[in-house]
Image 1 (tube, rainbow, N blue to C red):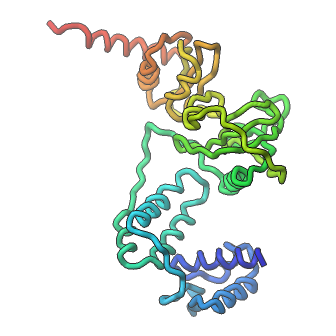
Image 2: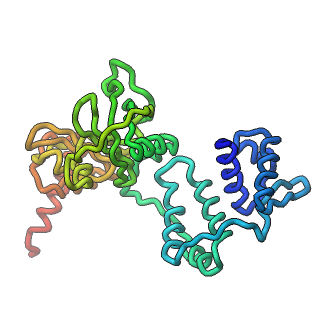
Image 3: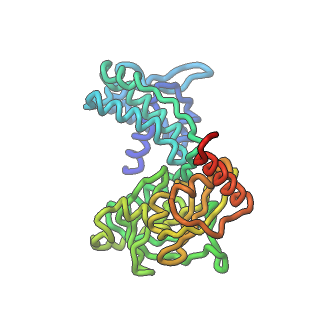
Amino acid sequence: MANTSHRALRLLSLLGSGRVWPLRELAARLEASERTVRRDIETLRGLDYSIATVRGPDGGYRLAAGNTLPPLLFDHDQALAVAVALQTAPGTMFGLGDDASRAMATLHQVMPPALRASMESLRLTRLRNYWEFPGPPIDPAALTAVGTAVRHRQVLVAETLRPDGTRAEPGDADFEAAHRIEPHHLVVWASRWYLVAYDRTERKWRVRRVDRLKVRPTTQQFPVRALPADDLAQFVMSTHDRGDTPAQWPCTGSARLALPAAVVARWAPGGSVVEDLDADHCRLTLGAWSWAGIAGILATFDADLTDVRPAELVAACGELARRWAAMGTPAR
């Protein structure tokens, strides 16, 4: 019964997009037989949902005008919030583009005219920011598993994946055996999903990239623990070993900074990696569209730089130093 209800709701969501759905396509989307889909359509009709049958070679099923979908109690600001959220969400999760479009169409169909106009007034065109490399989109199934464990306070068995999403094998540099963790918070920062969890194996708090975790749910519950810091955002941003990997920039370089790793991790741009060297030093690896761009970002930390790599970055630092020195020389 639960599977039938879930499938019927999914079917209603598909039909609510306003388009005509061939029976074969509905069956493929619902991963059910055509006979089962016909039965589900009749179930919805029995609940007073007006589902029209469209004849002909391009025929199928659609939700007819005058349907009995329940009204949505949104105010003007809520309608705008939903419109923005649905148009921007596909950038952080796999496969949300089509689902978000269908959700917009369904909401548009059942909203009162005034709220429908509010949503139509805010059609966004998302442009790529070439100075920002967001993390890879998240698999909705993995995010659901982690989110469910956070909500119900259930222990997860977690393995760390390689940056490309494959499993590391024993002997690999990035191999880490499965750990039992207590997931406490999901955090989104710089378009990356992080999990704040207590690692039972290491007996310490960790911040982990969700896209680099392969999790296996358990039914074991855990008690609420006091967080490692009063400011959760500060804890996440100042944790340097949270699983970040260098973004794919045209130029990538690194330098040793005379600053603690926690300070650099807090202000390093998304897609960079901070390595803890000692209490007062760390190594920052980052990228940009040019070597001068990397040199300029390194200069913003206002700290001594050593062991700069590669040679192209060293040359760019020298060229910037020459330019800055020229700016400080009075003109004749």
